[in-house]
Image (cartoon, rainbow, N blue to C red; front, side, top):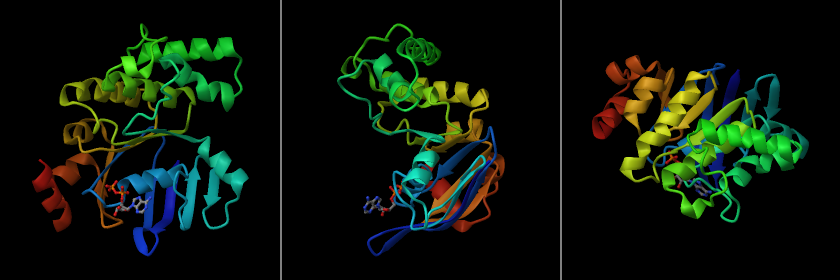
Length: 243
Ligand code: ADP
């Protein structure tokens, strides 16, 4: 359903992604693990072209893009197929929770305002913020802001949601509520790629775990295999450090 083939990315002379291949089936939750600097965020950003890969192919559903030859129109099409949830939430400060959620529905999907508002309200209800529609981000906790970010991603009905360390900016006591919401929408069968250091979440929720180091996929497999019987020494060392 989502297929990355030979994705490479360099910043200046430093090659950060070295021909990454990854397949994600429809409805699957794939967790990407790896030490800091291994290229996890860059890979995620390449999937919706926040970073332009130097080489490779991205297929989402029936849409395929050749990164070397893609023009503006193809990139625009690709971007419609995924939505990103950011570490720092990236909400508009001067818009309410509801306005943040419906921005894409109004501007990109051109939905009538009434329809966008009722859809946005239902999504905020779903992430447990039904009473916060008209509140500004500064009046919300980090966990609540991130839940607005998740509702905003859901609003676009993307084929895949990309989570970039969605809980790493949160105080520890707020991590649980955000993971709970992600868990809930995973159960609904929404395809997700999640970069996270939350091992408990990875074990419970992931269908497939990918371990990256030095810009390559070192090892991948179901969580039980990767956590309990890692094949590669680098994976073992990483897991030993983090757990
Ligand atoms: P991870 O998410 O695994 O911590 P990143 O994808 O953020 O890793 O970063 C991988 C490498 O790419 C790091 O060495 C980082 O410094 C570098 N990098 C990331 N973004 C940029 C950028 N915009 N310009 C230059 N170097 C970058």
